Image (tube, rainbow, N blue to C red; front, side, top):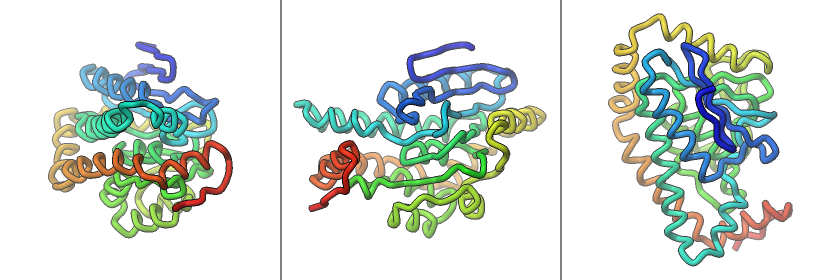
Length: 263
């Protein structure tokens, strides 16, 4: 282990480095400090020559339930709430761009469902490994929110039709369906998800790090010609969406475990 924070664990087992979301009691809901910690861990690993791939996984039965909605609701009572939400959106955008621009392949090893922002992190990875019971789910419209970061990455990875279905219906899809749509690359038994991701890093390590860096750059910045512009627009929309009456009602309803009554 090379570092540890309260909600993030970071391990090194060459040729891989692993970042673990470690908040199982909240289904690895992603708080502000976790966003910063994940980004710092990626930046540390990309500077370690012997680390050839980075694995992002979680503890417990859920990869990540998405953004910490309680933290978002609590922020609404602050006097500088708009600035706080703007900073949150920029931090998430920065993390996604760090993942996409990291010269080393990143593998999301899904130990369970990837929901909301958790799904966004999986989509920002280069490869996704999971088990058959995992689901992708983007329920933001049920919370009165929009997830245009997910829209951007879903369109990039699977196409606009995939993005439209997942974001308009707010319905989860199985690992099998996600695989058909190109969002998942390998399915294994639950107890070997990380091991399979680590095995893939071993396969990656046989090739030239420089060649792989050039390939990733071409995929994300040439084939994804407008990807980073779209992420900037999506980030601004993320902050704006939190200011609406629909978001206040949707988030409150979720926390209070009731059906929302949208305006």
